Amino acid sequence: MKKLLVVFLISSITFPAMSQTKSAAGKKSNYGKNIIAFNPVHLIASDFVGVGFSYERLVNDYLGLKVPVMLAINNNYFNVGLEAKLYPTKNNGPVKYAIAPTIMAGIGENSYENYVYVNGNYVRQDIIEPASHFGFLLNQTLNVTITKQFFIGLDGGIGINYYDEKADNNNANTNLSFLAQLHVGMGYRF
Image (cartoon, rainbow, N blue to C red; front, side, top):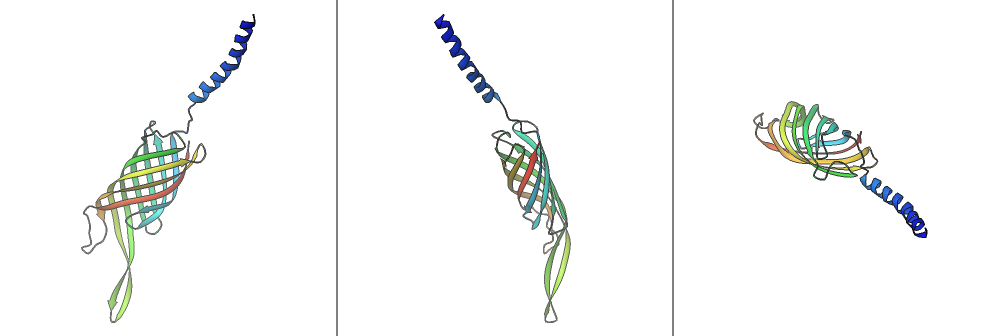
């Protein structure tokens, strides 16, 4: 009888402990499949500075599709892209890293000042020209989750423009050109 009582006491103490351990280990945090973000700083190598917004849909643990949009504040310019974000270590967790092949296009105007020497004086000319581009980037992304649904992130990428309409000495530059972007953002995951 004493042996039965001892086995019962030991069992009643250890089974709840094992039960809690299994449920804590088996519990998976659900961060949500949708991400909206605001980028107060969005830079593009073509001298465009702006603010950005984005929406990302997480397809599975390793893939997300993101649509970033940027509005320039220093020129009349609009930029949009499509990213396939590849998460090598899954997209759940407090710190997330992704590599994102990106197709990007933009359209708008580029304005600058030019000084011309006329009759012994320099005269300033304000020049506004059309600008557009279409290119490919390879982005690197690092997101740090502050709370379960709020995060801050840093994205940066380099690539090439396949088409870049920007004034040059010959008034057209449709050759391949360098493309880079950097943005700092914060977002909500639901």
